[in-house]
Image (cartoon, rainbow, N blue to C red):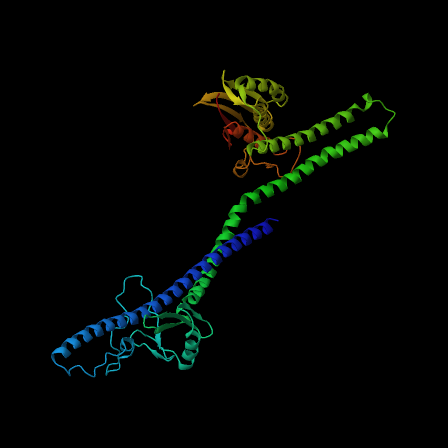
Length: 462
């Protein structure tokens, strides 16, 4: 069962982490793709803007040149004739130098501010009024194959201005028409925005490594988290075996007693009283076990606010301890145990008298039970630093260190053989601890060969 629980715990953790990483990495890839597409469109827009600015610059220069020519013609007719300013768009986009480079300054690279995007190859074309087209080389940093270009121009010839994607040709485009009715179209390859694919592969590798690391961590934490569950499960399983043994014995006795009684129906109850008394004793033993289980269940329910706890009242703990000592004097006498006490007067606490009585009787019964024949038991009650300290000491056999740290655990018994009689059910000290903690106190135990065993319950005074 615990193994299946661990597997479910690890599987749930891994599934949760995998989903979270997948969502985060997908969001990163989507954002990266959107930023890459935005960078491509910005590069195409800048390339078109560059050619338009060159065209306007040439237009302004031609205007100034024409005005100068008219002034010169007025003074010297004949000069300036035959000169044609030409189409400024053609001059902006089509003048070549003798060394094969364009007039004008193309987009610069390098020396950009920190964080500037990568250079995107862009091809810019002019679509003339006649329907023909030509490369605007002054702003172009790429070219397109003729067959692909013809298809692209044919699709965009009658298209409105704007930007988009020609998925069948693998191109992004941006179209803009100038005041001279000449359209400029910038193209960029879709691969310019495919950096997200490399990023996705990188993130996938990182995700696999992260999942492997988290798997190891999950295995470790599953063991750590389920350790208390495992301990409780083992204690409960041990208790079931102990309780089964304890219940089996009285039930066997009760059935044997009733069988004897039924075999002699003619006899009187007085003549069969030993079987009746034996049946009653065994029934009371089973009733005690059930009562202990119910008390523990109620203490747990009150601790978790499942049920409302009983209202607390002022309890004279001194009188309570004195009263219980009187009850145990006969028990100590029967077992030849010397019972000593030193109870301070007027020590009071807030709480439930029934449960505080259970705390005191559990410690006294434990001392008398394990002091041994001709042993000693000593009970002290005194006030110290605003607390009532109940100290119960007894001689007797040492509680081993491995058992001492578990004496307050539920269902725990040092008697692994599950013998009845002095052993009990392993619930008394667990109940005592729960009662002490319910009243805001603590209970501790220590044991040594020289000093014997001592239980100390500390409760805040009223």
